[in-house]
Length: 158
Image (cartoon, rainbow, N blue to C red; front, side, top):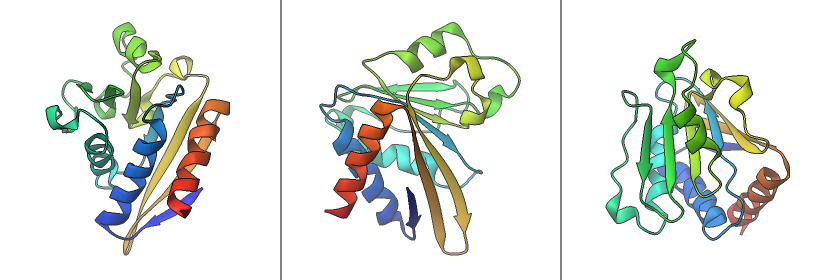
């Protein structure tokens, strides 16, 4: 699925659609994000977290220096930023959080995720900066991810 995000509101709408699809879902496939600095990844995470129950206790910021922020939403959100981990591996604690079935994880700079840490099912988001706004390509890898992505498509088309 390809989406043009021509405004902040378009990014927020996509984030709210994904939040609606994971809220109460038994499936929480992580979202692995790729894209340059300034593409809108952290803004997307902020808007998604704010759309979930419990967001009043969450302050979203890029976890560049500690690699992972956990937000007390429902479901809990793990926000990874792997920018600084290129070639350094991935700790067992981080991998445990990424694969935890009760957390919804969003991974910025997912290209730094070791291949053996990839979950069976995930949503891949590739962000591109354009002259006017951004575009994002969403791809489902696995059945659970496809279920969530189908829901997002339905919410956006409603």
